[in-house]
Image 1: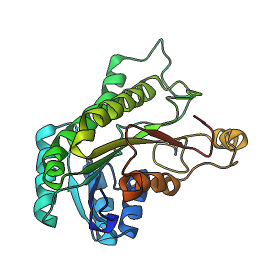
Image 2: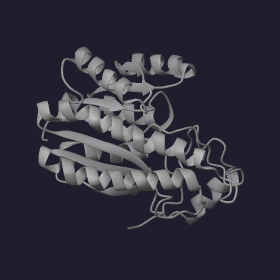
Image 3: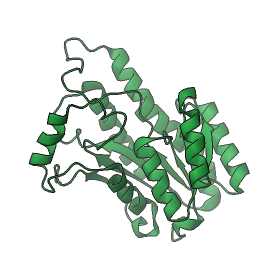
Image 4: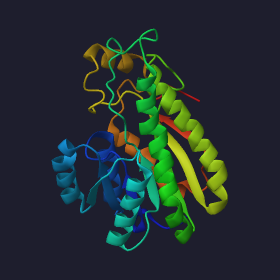
Length: 255
């Protein structure tokens, strides 16, 4: 794909706030047309406000329901007059990064794993399947999945969350292998602890201080900095890159 970002239609799941909204703003700044997605009725006001700010459309949809996701893609194509060409799988099942409060291995249940797998893997599977007809019309497509550096460096063993993100990395690479001949790239951007999102709001300040102290850049990564890496994979500059995972965490994880 050599088409500039300003001519692209972008879906960002889970984008009424936090990292998803930062990614949406980054695409808007490059002239792309944005679809915001949210799930909870309590997010409707924030999503509507963000849509007004970004001249975007906001669509409520449960990404774990394939029929609902397919409807979202149809609505978006009807609104903009062309298919979605870039998908950013950012939506996260409810989760709080607080190591002291996390369920330990002896107590955690499969239900916790199931919830994270549905949000991360089933959601990405559904948006990928729904995107394929549009990608085939266009002759290209971009999928960027949001991962976590905890897969490479599980300093806090969030069993359910990290396992789901590890599975999403495997899904990223298998999709890249299968969809490459169709002109579709599939990559992952993995963040560390971000300052500040709803998920990290419950993280004690001493943890932020610890992360700053051991990170080469001596600061905690922001959602806006992660958004820059997403834009690279989505842009013409990333057209020959697929099946890759880049950690945006100030150098905490190096590979």
